[in-house]
Image (cartoon, rainbow, N blue to C red; front, side, top):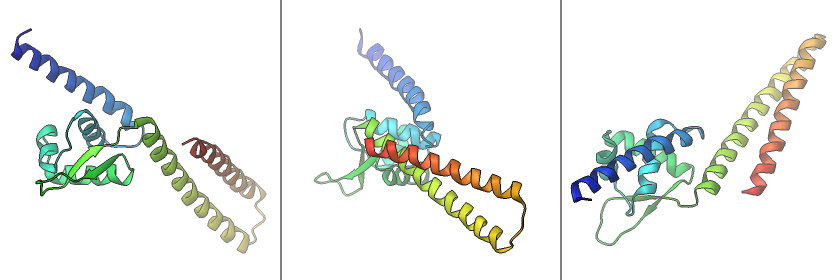
Length: 161
């Protein structure tokens, strides 16, 4: 295979890999840019700067900065140091399954905790008004049990990762 054909085949492979793999990552609540950026970092053999990322995805440096911060917050990428390079460098974490499951489960647990706190506050307000609307109270209790069950499921998942 000639060099140009090999380069074109590799480019097509990378394009398809980025396109398909990023669709899976979007199911973990990453947006398209964040997902594509992660795949690019994952495929890259070397850490990348924001400028490298911008050129690879054809997006603005601001978009890359926002996406990299999200990926850092979810511990999906790490900042690395390389002698002689003054710009920040980033690379993808390689233990994909564990990292994504941890990030996903933690986000669910945080959301459940927020919602439970909100529902408990509603319950307190409901009780203070001492309304005797049993149907509303039953629905509120059902919603709280639902969140408790979700919390149990995600806590069990969290123990695995």
